[in-house]
Image (cartoon, rainbow, N blue to C red; front, side, top):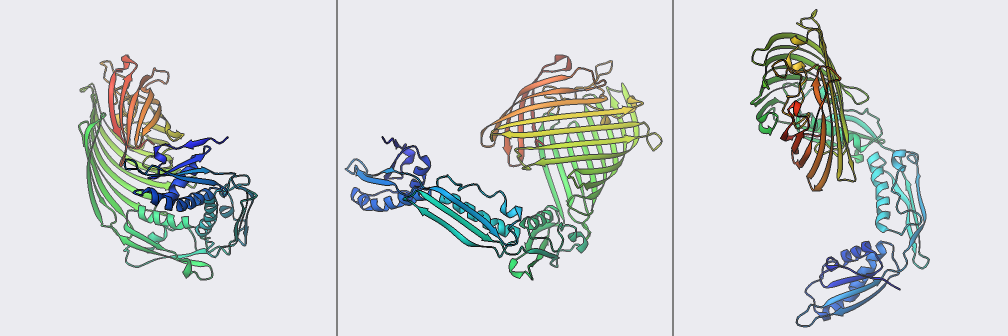
Length: 569
């Protein structure tokens, strides 16, 4: 007995209706795609069109491995009150299955794992023949060969033999790779205005390296991301190869020297804020840069300048000289800080970013309306390590961030107090089944000193707020003095877990729990906050709106609304 599947209204192709025996929605979709829209035809016209529709349906079925269908047709309706409909009753029959799959490589690249490994599994022996899968397998081999530099490669045998009567298909693909081309020396066309030594440092491959399209793409990306150029055009045509060596020519257009930008933002931690940036993208042929930034909000104002010298390789390594001034007035803690410093940034072979720094900080502070005042001068050498891995910079689905910073000062070296300061951060993101996202965050900090009262507020720890423990005010979680004024702690412990569910494109619901505090003893109690949130993935990054409840009233926990924006990693 045949089960006839009558398709819903979405299955109508205008005046053609497809009725397919069995449950084969993919077959029906393909038939409708081949037939297309049929409208405005009389009953007589539909009868003349029926042979064409049957032929189109047959080709659609063959594309998915059904070579011996039975297709009956009839025309219904067509009176004054009803449009005529051509009905195709289709029994797809027995499908053709793959009985032989032979894929073989010959020549110098036959053992190249990048070319021959992990080819598409379909069409596999025993599967119903899918011509689209066969085309994909063939195209994958050709695309890989071009990407890896086997430009003389070709199929010496490419056959798909189908026996509809036996219901069998034999697939044979034999690819002769030819010699793999190599990359030659990189030449930069005149007119870019930079020293040749700087541009050569962007090239990560040596002359004679086996060709790989990713090497050309990476060179293009590195030059574009440098900030020096408005346009990058790399020409590496195989047709100009000399004995298998492809010359690489780079054409560069230098960007405008200076740019100015300004923006406004808002978060519940600092309220509305203004940010302005001035940047000089290149100063001289050596590629030096400089800039200035300012951020102004009610509790915090700062102005900083920097001067940057590229190193080798300039994509990751640099020396930066900085100077800045910052004023803060947050929860009865006032401070003014002047900073002069230098950073050497270097990417290690294992992908970690290392930053060695030396900075001088002069800070004046006032805690609790003159209850605790001070002025410090510190020379702080430091080292930092960080690693960021994510599958997208704007809205990643998985990834992690790890960061460790250690700084210190000693009274014997231009400092008023001995300090060892440690700060660590770990974030992780994982997405399950496309819609379920899990985020975790852990922060730890510690400061060791012989005179904590002389440690400036910028080196003490405070918790609470949008990026810390939600449900509590910004930097309100902290040890307090005798008058109940937060004065900062020796340690910071904060952990957070968050679940997000994507219910629409660019929209997610969130549920979270935060746990942590700034404390003077690792056994001191921690505060907990929990709540729900809404996420919108805007063109400039995620926007977050949270409503959180601080579960510990003794720490000031209450209902709070948090709004913030920025990357999740």
